Length: 130
Image 1 (cartoon, rainbow, N blue to C red):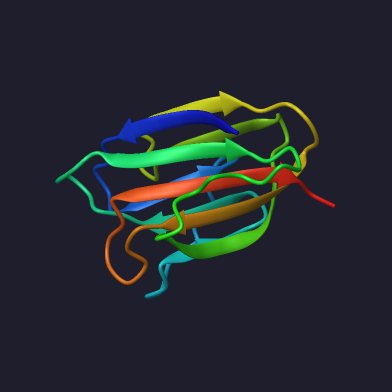
Image 2: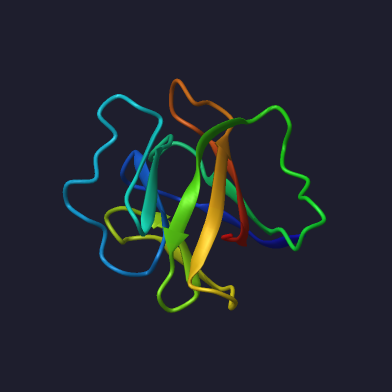
């Protein structure tokens, strides 16, 4: 089930997804479309040219309808200490916060429309970690 959707303007070509806590300063893409820590995923996006479209889904066991043409760039777990999920510019200039409740550890799948360049759209699916 889709629980949020946001069109986000970013100033920096890296978008952060995950905990509202500070992002580790050593979390870098190094040529990959995404990188992660225990609390965040960062994704390469098109900055300053278009709004980045992000859809947030929560899977309650029924599956989610993410865009099948997108490519998964991250599939792992994140720790969300206060049960909030943040989508935002790594500079902190733009951000969207969604309270998701539930457990503190979530399985997160991030799929983007352009994994080799700069994404303009992303689908994020959350499910309770096992």
